Image (tube, rainbow, N blue to C red; front, side, top):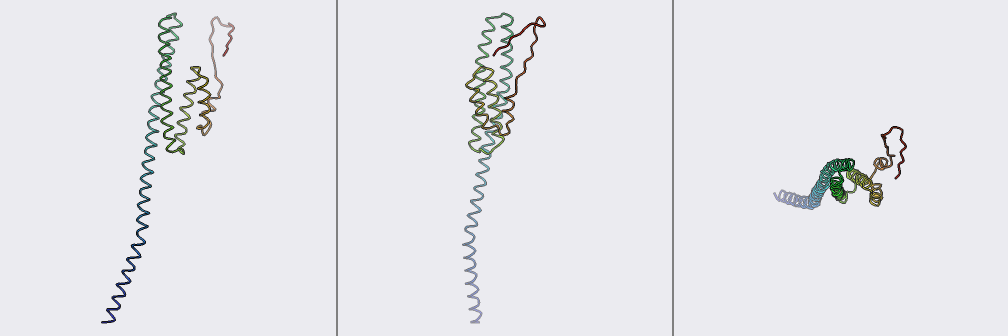
Length: 193
């Protein structure tokens, strides 16, 4: 029985040591698990923030494209008034077109800023870089149409930074086409820029 008591004491001591070793080993494992979970949650929250900005930018882009179509219709209507010698109406319409062009540039600028905010959070997102390249190309086309050459130069320089596949820069470099119908047929036409 004394032997049984000694054996039981040794087993008890061994169990206590084993429990202590397990407890000491469990602390880092639990800490690592908590850290890993926290990191995963932080990354998911970060990804949600980036995605929210990209979704917001897409909405702004869709709105700007709609505004661009409306502005183009207003521009044509103003030209038609000029062509029909409605000088006062044409001038008033053209003033509205110019104000609309400035507002449209502001809308595209807000879209660009929203995409840039996403890129500041995660610069590795190719979709965001492509979206910003799309916005910069649209703004460059509008700036060219509105004869803002300094803006064109700046926007095309920025486009080169974000146009990963070069597709947008290539579309910018495409030569323009012009079809003329003149009356009387065979009349000479001189075009200057």
